[in-house]
Image 1 (cartoon, rainbow, N blue to C red):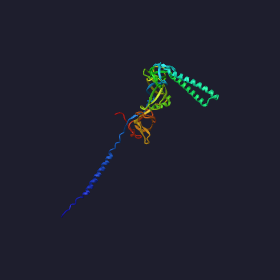
Image 2: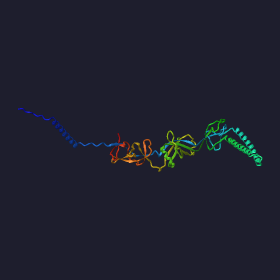
Image 3: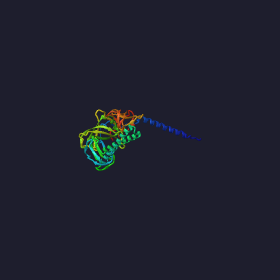
Length: 363
């Protein structure tokens, strides 16, 4: 008798083992879900700072330069040789006082010559007028005589004016700051001879940055005082006079000119340096708030905002703000925040509304 032994199918064994493995894996995962919790993400650490008041516009100091009300280089309007030069450098002169004079010899002769020709022309035109009235002279000859008389009259006035131009007198009470020519020097017309400065009032010039130009719209809102090195304990009031509206090509600053009274400042001369203190008057404007540039964020519409930190709930919320012009690393806040509020100053773009955060203390 022959027995046949049948072998189990290999495919049946393969599927049985794979199914068993799947059942074991499901059982393992089920056990894991019952015993293991997925950890929550850690809180984001943020740097927080209090909103502070920007006091830079409450008082500022500048280095100023003292100047005269006006500085004039006096000159002759005619050429000639200087024969008188009484003006002395560093001395005050009164209005109308002689500053310099030219040799007048040639100019006096020119006046005498012009006067003689004028008198001759006057006699000639008088005679020809009488002849024309009697009908003995043609109109053309009278017209020629009238023209000659007029030309000689102009020549006489010109000669007399040139004679007056040989003297320079002080146009105002001032200080002779420099003699530019020596006595007995031959000078050309309009060549500077003496430099005179008007010191009825001193002028102080400073240069301010563009963010302070708005102060000039209402000059009564601030005060300006001058402090000199030799009298640091004293402050002298300055009065606004004018400002230049074109910025300097190098520093992009604007020049402002103040007036300084001569009382108690007789020893102060143009060219000296002075410290100018600009202060806002009390009650004119509340202190301006400022935040670091790093605290600034923008919403979906591109509007500026900051993230305010709530110390009790340790969460953050966005706040829309109105900003001024950036000043180095800070930005003035015109509205939206109050002083001493806590804001996030780093990583603001990673935050979301109501997000729980952890305040950074130290490394």
